[in-house]
Amino acid sequence: MKEKVELNGIILGSYPVRDYDKRVVILTKERGKITAFANGARKMNSSFSGITEPFNYGTFSLYEGYDAYRFAGGDINEYFQEVKNDIEAICYGSYFCEILEYLCVEGIGDADVLNILYLSLKALEKKIIPNNLIRRIFELKILALDGEMMAAFSCAKCGETNVSAFAASYNGLVCPECEKYVADAYPLQESTVYTIQYILSSPINKLFSFNIKNDVFDELDHVVGTYFAKHISKNFKSLEILSTLS
Image 1: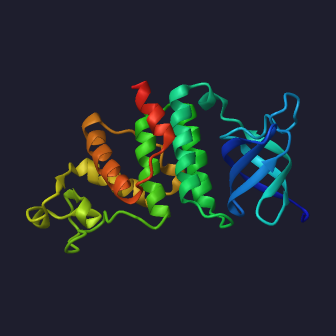
Image 2: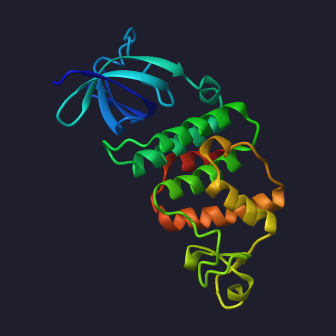
């Protein structure tokens, strides 16, 4: 066992192992996704019980092993209790964590990915914009951060800067002329095009600062849902639970 390290991050998932222990997956700023074991964390009086819950954000003290870490303690800055008290918010937050647990590579830190998760949870907590809009913003931006950025600032077929429709077959937006010849072209309002471009180009701390009209959201919902499903084929348990709530 190596020396103790302190890593800043958010707990993506916490799973029971053996009789009283937990396996905890943490997204850290310094080392990306890591796995840690918290011995005795499921015992009633364990000091690890409260700090090893999903969504907790803070500084975790860990002993580094050969293929995993061992919990030594932690200081929690945010428990996101308002999210944990709302079943729909729990489902959305768990969905975001599931995506990152699936996409992120162990040992490679990325502050932007950690920040978007943190700010998505804050947005769920504040309830200023709808949860389904938070979801679509998260999905579109996280794909861009993962190297699957949608072509949205010029035609994905010919390069023309004026775009007017989404074409999944071209992984992005197309111009009015190409729209005529693309079988799966889905026409968009100018406001929807701007919204997509805004999400892709804005810094992460500006992502959850706007709302949109229902008709614009319907188009964004279709575009991001189609694009995300094309690139991420995994079924997420939290979405299955969320579908039973509606």
